Length: 148
Image 1 (cartoon, rainbow, N blue to C red):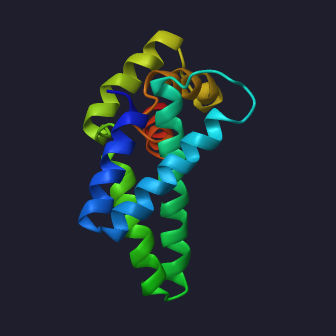
Image 2: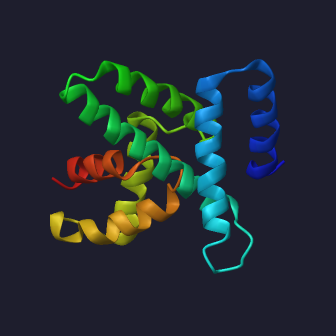
């Protein structure tokens, strides 16, 4: 079942159960998917594109949570945390640092990278290979650690 169908079913279930947090999160996802579909490219969205949109939504929520926490706005932060939890349900499970290290070490070996100057090559391959499975910040940290 594709993401759009899943979202519609979950939206109906959230409406029936009157779950306001789920409604906000699911509507945000539905809106982002609809915007991406109608942005003029007129192409069917693949799973990688859907994951990219979900990651963007999650990142926006995480940034908002950081800002609200710094400003002492727990009420707004709580709303964003609820929506983030809903969005993360639709994202694939993220790999842990222990799982990422051997994959990135193999990429470093494949590219022949030996210093920080080669970080761009490694990051390009790693980002492509690990799309949806890890965020760029954690990939970057491990690449730096292994190349240092």
